[in-house]
Length: 508
Ligand SMILES: Nc1nc2c(c(=O)[nH]1)N[C@H]1C(S)=C(S)[C@@H](COP(=O)(O)O)O[C@H]1N2
Ligand SMILES: [Mo]
Image (cartoon, rainbow, N blue to C red; front, side, top):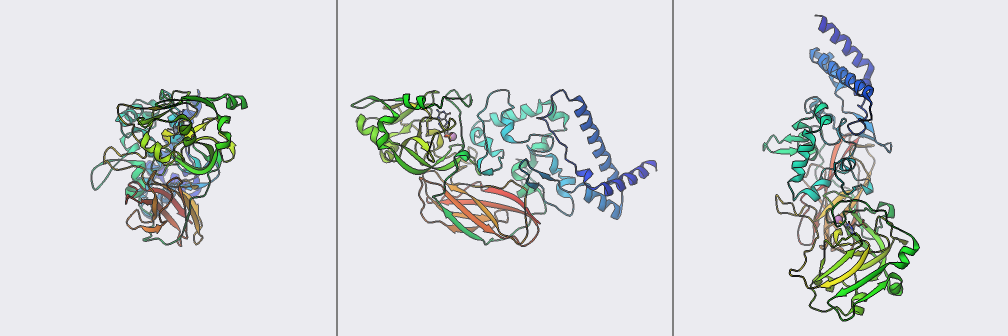
C-alpha cells in the first residue's frame, strides 16, 4: 500500500516536471575518468532515480499510466555541438522504440557510450589512422567495416574490447547494446545498421517519392572539406607533421628510374611550364558506403606523360611504383593503366589554386584518377618503372567478403544533415550528395522513402568517371512524422549500390 502511494506521488511529479525525466545523461565513458568520483556518484543516483520512476509507472493503471509513460518514454530531443536539434528515434504510439526496445541505450553513440565513432578510434590501445567526416556526413560503423571487413579481427577486437571494459560492464552493457536479433531470420545483426529498417516502429513510408532532381560534375569540394588519410607504409596510422616551407618545395627531388633509357632526378620547378589544371575526383579505396572519403577538386600538376617521355620508359615494365618519404609503396599501379591514362595521371602540387596542405602531402601527391585513393601517393620521392613477378593489383572499390559483391561501387552519400534533423512540414528540403563508381561511369541515381520497397530513378546519362556526380534532390514532405531517405546509384556496367546511403529525419 505504501509503495503504491509513493508511486502515485512520483507519477504526479513526472507529469508536472515534464522534461526532467528526459534530461540527458551527460558525459559518457570518454569524459569519465578524471578522478570525478563525485560525478560518478551523481550519475549513479540519477540512474537510481530513473529506475525508480520506471518502476513507479509500472504500478499505475489506465489513463494515468498512459500519460506518465508517454512523458517518461518520449524519444529524447537533443542538441548537437553545432546547435542542431535532433531526435534519433521515431515516435510510436506504443512506446515500443523506447520502453521495450530501449533504443536510447543501444548502439555506439548511446548516451553512456561514445560521443562519435571517430573519437573511439583514437581511444584504442594502439595508434589508428584518424577518421573524420567532411560534408557533415554522420559516421557509422560502416566506416570501420571498410578497412576491417576482410579480417575477423574487427569482430574479435570489438567483442574483447567491450566485454573486458569496466566502463561497458558498469554501464550495463550486454549483447543487445550493439546487436539485434532479426525477428524473421534469427540472424544476429548490428543494431545501428538495422534499427531504422527493421526494429523501430513509426517511420512514415512514401512510395515512389517525386521531387526535383539535378546533378553536376563541376562542383568543387572546398579545400577544408578535402578528406585526409594517413596510414603510412608501416600501418601505424600516425598523421605526420611535415615541413610546409617554401624551401621544402624548392628542394623537393623525385628520382625516376627502373626500366628506361634515361633515368633522371628532377625538382618540381623543372616541369613548371608543363603543368596542367584539371577537375578530378579522389575516392578513397576504403570510402565506406555512405562515406565522406571523396573529393572533387581543381588540381594543378605535371602530367606523368611528360616524365615518361623524358625517361623513355621501356615497354617491358609492368608496374609503376611511386614511393613516398614515409615509405608508402603499398599500391603500385599496373602499366596497362599508366599507358592508358598517362596524360591524366598528375604529380599534383596545387589543390583549388593553393599549394597542397600538409595533410594532402605537401609538396606533391600523385593523382591516378578513377583508381582508389590508396594509389594517390603523397610526398613522392621516387618513380620506379619495374617488371614485377606478377602485375600489380588495381584497387578500385571494396569487396564484401561475405557476399563477394562490391561494398562501395557504386557508392553514394547524403551530405549536410545529421541523422534526426527536424524540417518544417510543407517546405522543400534540399538533399544533396555524391555518386561514384571509380572507373565506371554513373548512369542513374535512385531515391527511396519506403525503406527500399520502391525506388524513383533519375537518369544522368553517361557521366565522366574522372569526376564525381554531385546530385541534388528537392523533396517536400507534407505531413509531420519521421522519415528514412535512402539513395543508391547505378553504374554503366549495370551494377547497383548494394548498401544504399540513408538519412533518418523528422518533420514537424
Ligand atoms: N605517403 C603516403 N601517401 C598516401 C597515404 C599514406 O599513408 N602515405 N595514404 C593513401 C590513402 S589510403 C589515401 S585515400 C590518399 C588520401 O589522400 P589525401 O589525404 O590527400 O586526401 O592518400 C594516399 N597516399
Ligand atoms: Mo584510401
